[in-house]
Length: 352
Image 1 (tube, rainbow, N blue to C red):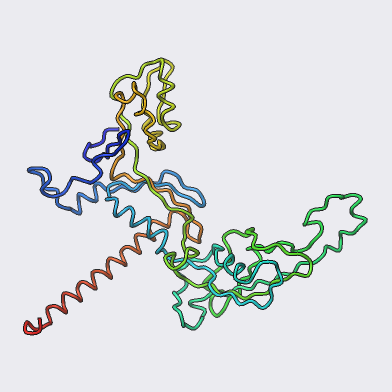
Image 2: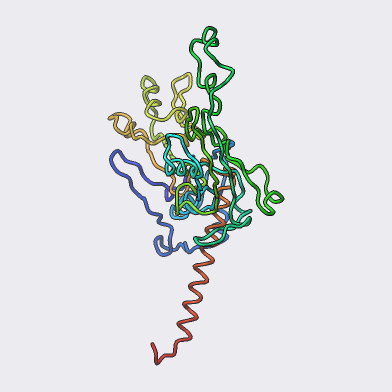
């Protein structure tokens, strides 16, 4: 991989180098490195490497670490979702205390598009525009089909054989449409139906009304749309001199699987596609013979993002949502700066 050395963060056995970007005005003689929109567009690349139902891995190339980290933090804490906030308990005879059960209910990811509802502030009246209502009613009882005579054919019965409704699951949440919600929403409920909330025994029951509202993860983690959102810099491995054939396999084991290929003749090469999976453990630099044969680095502006969605958002929606939030924040900052500037111009010089 041919990479401009200016983009590389050096990786040594005990330290790193060239951490900061040096392409700024005045650093290199006779070079104009002032920020330019067209230049930025040419450098910017977003490419999806892997996509599944709940996770995505994509490359974000051509931005500063501050921008990449801002997207990561926004995905975790500022992209809005819905979660259960208010729990009204009419009956709970399980062994789980009301507060603990309410906390578990709040952590259930809900399958509803946050754009369909408004945010509800403290003190606001619940309406069909800012609140979803759920019912949770379940009672455990003995299974009448299983009696003492059943033990002859089934001497080791399971809970499913002995009891009815012996597990309180997220799938037992029943959405109660209010107002125009049934016209605007469909299939509202938990994203996962088999989350165990409590275990019941005959005579134990739960009867609750739940209110779900829209908020963001910085208020509480239950509103975070992701299970995890991380990034790492793309590795860069350069072989400076041929690796001895008799130690080719040892050299390959110093890297993550797939990063290094050894052909039938014992020739060692770096796999350009597999190189992205290397963890840069620096193990190769601790070998007296290998340390001068290889150069390790990471590409400063090439970020490999790994994001797992645990909400109504599809994984590929999370970055665009984060960009939308960032644009809103920038607009608010710009408006505030304009107001401050206008206010300073309106103040008479005598009052300054």
